[in-house]
Structure formats: C-alpha cells, structure tokens
Length: 165
Image 1 (cartoon, rainbow, N blue to C red):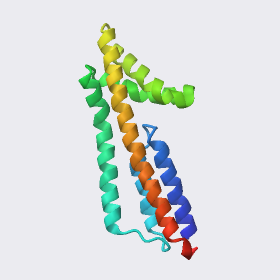
Image 2: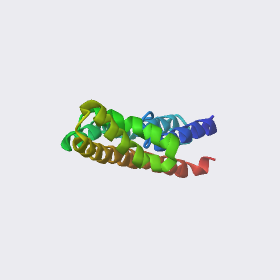
Image 3: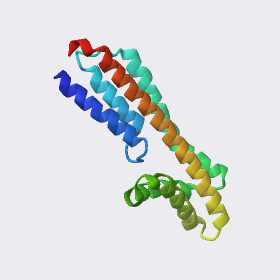
C-alpha cells in the first residue's frame, strides 16, 4: 500500500511541476495533493502543521497567479482581452511551438486579445501584451518554485524513510 501511495504522490508532484507551465492545472495545489497523499503512507512522517502551512502557501500562490497577469496588463495599459488572450495563447503556443510556445504564445495571445477588445490601438495592445507577458511569466516562475520546493520535500520525506523500505 505504501508503494502505491508513494507512486501516486510522485505522479501528483510531477503533474504539479508541469502544471506550473500549463494554465489548466494548478501547479502548487496539485503538488500539494501529492504531499497530502504521501502523508497517508505509514512509512513517511509528515506533520499536520507542515500540511497546513504548505497548503496555505499553495493556495496563496494560486490566488496570486490569478491577479499577477491582470495587474501586469493594467500597469501597461491593457485589460481583460490581453489577460484572456495570454492564457489562450499559451495553450495554442505549447501545442504548436512546444517549449518556445511558453514565451511566444502568451505574448501574441495578449496582443491579439487586446486588439479584439480595442480594435484600433495597436501600440496600447503591444504594451498590454508586454505587461501581461511579464505578469504571466512572474506567475509561472512563482508556481514553478513552489512546486519544485514541494518536490524537494517529497524527496526529503522519502529519503528520511528509506530505512523502512
């Protein structure tokens, strides 16, 4: 049973790390689910305090990630069109451009999203796209760092329980 829990937890940790780059999977929360699953293993000792603190961090980053691209776009003169466009652009970019789509997709998506909304203001759309991209990449970076930290704790908990196996 412990091996099943550990493998399932590892899957969620890895899915959370990947989810840091994909807008449809909440990276840190998914990685936290991996830690929660790991805590049910009798071989691993994870305290309730650790789970509460790590969940609070994951939830905070999740909520922050919603607002960072919006703030970035608004600081540079954009609106909802650039924010939604950046998310859609990321998905399309990854599908068609692979890793390069992570950078190019949100920028082009924010640009075209803002153009759809404002129709004539190309310079404003470009500024909004840049701001949205900065905000989006900041959110991705934060999610990746937290998910990676949860992955580190996963490895640490497994390493500390290695005598049991």
